[in-house]
Length: 318
Ligand code: TXA
Ligand code: MG
Image 1 (cartoon, rainbow, N blue to C red):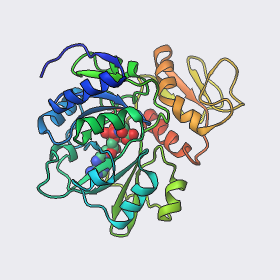
Image 2: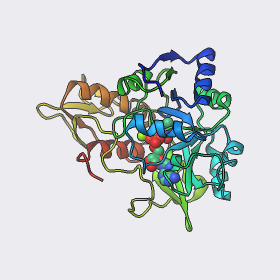
Image 3: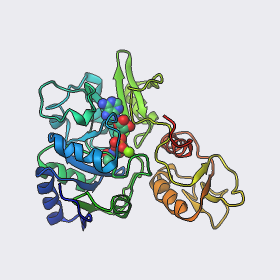
Image 4: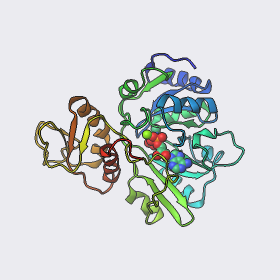
C-alpha cells in the first residue's frame, strides 16, 4: 500500500465518488459521520481492514464497527433479533450501534470483528457517509479516525493531525454535529446491554427496550472499553469547581468563570457533546493539566462523563 501525505478534499460530489472508488480498490478514506470522523475501508476486504488496524496502531483484539446503508444491507451479513430490528427501525440512520451475531460464510472480513462471532453494525445519518456507503456498494469498516487511545476527531484537521500519512483521502465535511461516538448496544440471553454510552441517550433507548443492563466486567464484552482511552497528553482533574495553579479550566454552564473555555454556557448537553473533543484538543495544546467542571449525568451527559472518566484514567490501565 502507498504511503503519502493524506489528501484533504472538500466533500463534494466529485470527491465522494473518487473516495468510493478508492474504497473499492482496498484503500483507506476518512469521512465525516454525525458522531465523529471514521477511518473507512471495505469491510469485505481483509487486507484493507488490516490496514486500518496498522494505521491506527489498534490492538487486533478490538473489533471495528461496520457501517451500512440500512437494515437490508446489514441483514446480508448479520442476524437481527426482533428487538435489534426494533432498535434499528427506531434509531437508524443515526448514532446507534448494534452488536449482533454474524452470518457464517458471508463476505465480511473476520478481522473486522476480531475473531468474535458478533459484529457491531450501524447506519450513519451524515449525508456524506450515506453517499459514500451507497457509492462504494460495500459496507464500510470504520473506527474513529484517530490513533488508538487518543482523542476522537470532530474536524477533518484533527484527522490530518493524527495521521501524517497512510490514509488515501480525508473527506472534509466540516465539524461533526453530535461530536461524541455512537451508543453501542449488545444483547445477552436476558436482553439488551449498554456496552458504550453515546449519541443516543440511555433514556431514549429505554423507551423502546425498557431498562438497559450494564455488562458485568469482563474482557470480551466490549474490548474497546479500556479504562484509559480518548486521552489527551494533559492530566485531567474532574468535577473541579475552579482551576488550580498550572491548570487550564474546561467549564460548563453559567457558573464557569468568564474567559475559560466553556462546553456550553447555557448548560446544554448536546452543545457540550459537540464541543467536547475539540476543546480538549485546544486545552491539551496549551496546558499540561486540565480541570473540568461537573457535567450532569443525565441524557448525553452519561456519554460525556464516560469519555471524561477515560480521558482522566491513569495511562496504560487495562
Ligand atoms: O460513532 C461511532 O461509533 C464512530 C463512527 C466513526 O461511526 N466509530 C467508533 O468506532 O467509535 P470505534 O472503533 O472507535 O469504537 C467501536 C466500539 C469499540 O468500543 C469496540 O470495542 C466496540 O465498538 N465493538 C465493536 N465490535 C464489537 C463486538 N463485536 N462486540 C462488542 N463490542 C464491539
Ligand atoms: Mg475510537
